[in-house]
Amino acid sequence: MTDTTQQAADILMTVRGGGPQVAGLGAAAPRDEAGAFAIQREVLRRLGTRVGGWKCAAPPGKPTSAAMLDATFLRPGPTRWPVPAGGRIGIETEIAFRLGRSLPGRGTPYALEEIKDAIAACFPVIEMVTSRYVDPAQVSPLEAMADSISHAGLVLGAEVPGWRGLDLARLTVRQTCGGAVQVEQVGGNPSGDPFTPLLWLANHLPGLGMQLEAGQVVTTGSCTGLITVAGGQRVTGGFAGFGEVAVELD
Image 1 (spheres, rainbow, N blue to C red):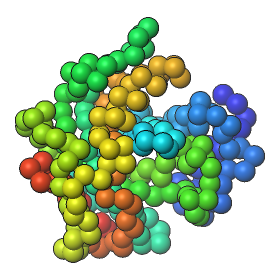
Image 2 (tube, one colour):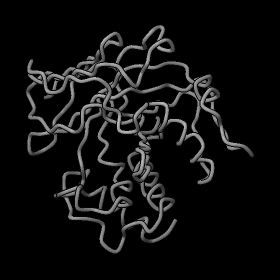
Image 3 (cartoon, rainbow, N blue to C red):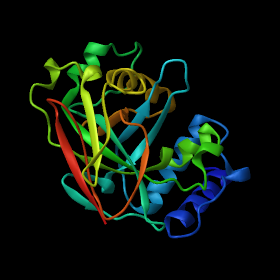
Image 4 (cartoon, rainbow, N blue to C red):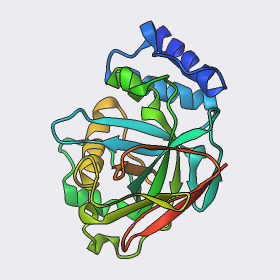
C-alpha cells in the first residue's frame, strides 16, 4: 500500500468521523483507477467492514465508474436512516441485482446471457448519497471514485418475482419525499439499461485483480438523478410493476 493511499484514507476517514468536508485529496489524489480502488478498500478496512457489493455506471460516450459498497450499510427497507450534519442527504432510486454465483476472471469476456444467468434476484433500491467533499462536482473522476462516488448506503426493496420477464430499461420510476412526487418518468438509467453496467463491471474487475462474488449486491445507477432532501421525511422509490422501497429520514 502506498503512502498516498494511506494519506487519502486519512483525509476521508477524518470527514467520516465528523470532520469538515474537504475540497479534494490534493497530493494524495489517486493517479489511476487502481489507486482509487485501493483507497476505497483501505477506508472499508479502517471501518472494520467488508465489500458487500458495488455501484457502477457505464453511460454511452462517458467515463465508466464503480465503487465498493460497505456491507454494514446494505439494509432492507422499510428502515430509518440518520441524516448527516447539515440536515440534508441525497437520494436516488435504482435497480439492483444480487448475484447467485461468482464471476471470476477468464480468457474470454462474459456474454450478457451468462451475466443474467448468474443473477439470483432483482429489486428496487434507494441509494443514500453523502459526499466527503465540499463540492463533488469540482473534484476529478478519480477523486470521486476514491470517495466511493459519494456512496453512504443502500436501502433494499423486496425481491421481485418474474423480473426476467420485464423490460427493466422501460419501467416507470417514481420517487416521493414527504408525500410529494419528485420524479415520475419512464426509464432514466444513465447507462440506458441496468444490465449494461453490470456486464461492464463483471468483465472489468478481473483486470484489476478483483471479481464479482456470489451474494454481492450490484446497483446500476440512478433512474431519478440525485435529489438532496431534508431530514424528518419519508422517502419512497420504486417502479411500476416492480415494487417500491421506503426509508424514514431522521
